[in-house]
Length: 465
Ligand code: SAH
Ligand code: SF4
Ligand code: F3S
Image 1 (cartoon, protein in one colour):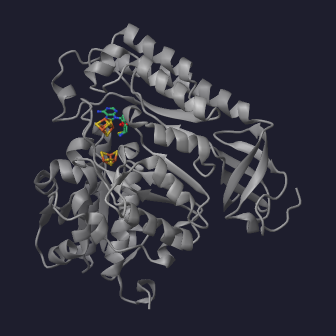
Image 2: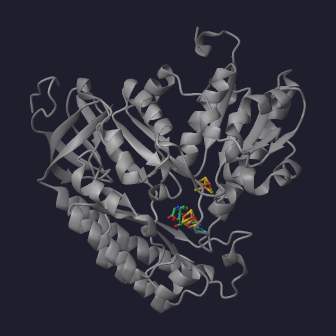
Image 3: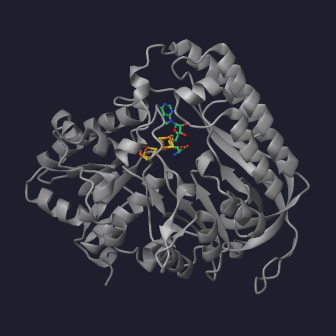
């Protein structure tokens, strides 16, 4: 019998903030709690346990958590008045960074669990249920991944055709603006066999595309069965051998870890999608140095050149921070110049946010807010122009599209291009799960419009275009 069919099963609602690693972690937490009798609900109002899986990367992200906790305090008071109750937990990077402080600042919180202790969640929840306030922000010696239960086939099917799979966690780079090395700890890679076993389970449940995750995923060096470290490129080849798994992606990468093996995989492995998220943060060497990124703008461009030599149609994406302490107009112009030189298909842009405990926080020449805002607007305009140019360059091309959902109207379906763009088109629902050739006919709002041209995979239903 599944938990969902248990009439009195307790319900957990998990609200996820931050990056894809948190999305993956939330799924694993739901799986772990499922094994101890909790059913996941998508409605906060019907939950017995609410977990906020938090992000600490910028001040705004952290502050959101405390306003949500305020709402949960009211919700719990109402429940108690009505004779019920509610348990509240904080997990993720704010939990790791603030620990006890959260429980002190927000008494509504019953449990605080850092990212390395999720395998202990069932036991922690049980302790919290008996009235104990539990704060667990240790970095335990045991590996959480090997102690977390596998997702059930049912849960995997419910999550759809694409899945995240964390292969690497933590960061040793210590960029001077960033909290991740403190919240996620030292860099570690999961063993190859574990990753492949999880990927096989995903493929068996119908997953067609897997996105490998890590804070510095291309630093992956998991051990194979002989105890030899394997790089991400070779891992991608192994994953592509799994029947049913047709597409592999990975995120997020650091420029310095872009090795020849991974670049060769992009050249030789069709299943590895031609899309690369390679944050650079700034185009100014002085700022890159102050950020402790450990490479120059020219070195970054040289890496991009090597990648494009191997895979000419690679779509590039990045992250940028404007207004890092000491950033002058000239430094910012250098960022705009780098954006032009690379020609990004997309990018994420952020105003520098001072994070307690990072070296950036004690730098004296902080950039005033209006200057940051103005630079952000200019950068966003440059990025948007690039994204539009890239989308336009896809028109009249025929791209393989993984159909992954129904469209807005009957008779329409939606999917993803190799470059991660959303594509909408006419087509029957039975194509969901297949990769079909689609001619791109127009650029829409944040998406492309396409037309299915013929069938691509042996055994797929024949198509009328
Ligand atoms: N590991 C990845 C990114 C991790 S954080 C990498 O090295 O690129 C995701 C992005 O958030 C970063 O790339 C950076 O652009 C942004 N970010 C991190 N700390 C920030 C801060 N203090 N202020 C503003 N943006 C920040
Ligand atoms: Fe943060 Fe830098 Fe590590 Fe990325 S590489 S997670 S930005 S410290
Ligand atoms: Fe945020 Fe932690 Fe991810 S700080 S971006 S949730 S690693």
